[in-house]
Length: 132
Image (cartoon, rainbow, N blue to C red; front, side):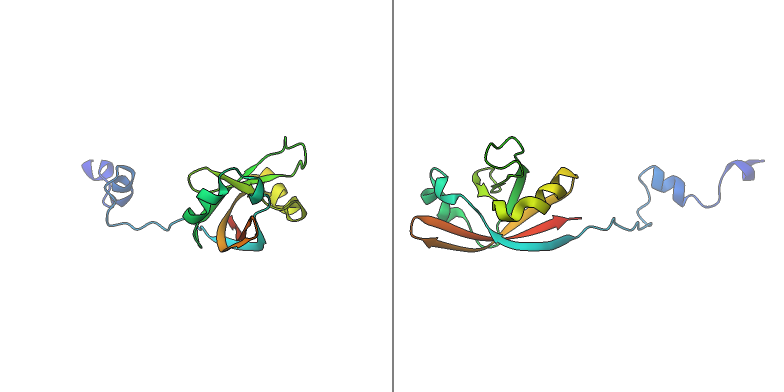
């Protein structure tokens, strides 16, 4: 009778109880997909951009946030650095598809690709990625 109660293969039981060290599970598929190259619009309107610029580097990850209440652009996407400091926006001419993706729950982010002062404007070239 004991043979019916005690399973011979306990791997599933060990896995469920956190003891499945000898079992390897496949990781979920994750990938960052390059979508588009553009620039950060509006950096010349950011207070303190002169002090912030030296702390921005090529390859820095940028976070995107939708701003549908924006009076100038209902598809506005705010761009912030890793410290949460606003750098500007995805240009209005480029944000139609990206705002729709974000509204559908997709995670978009950017990376700084180039940085150059052009007069009093800090031009930040960025690449936009979809995290899937």
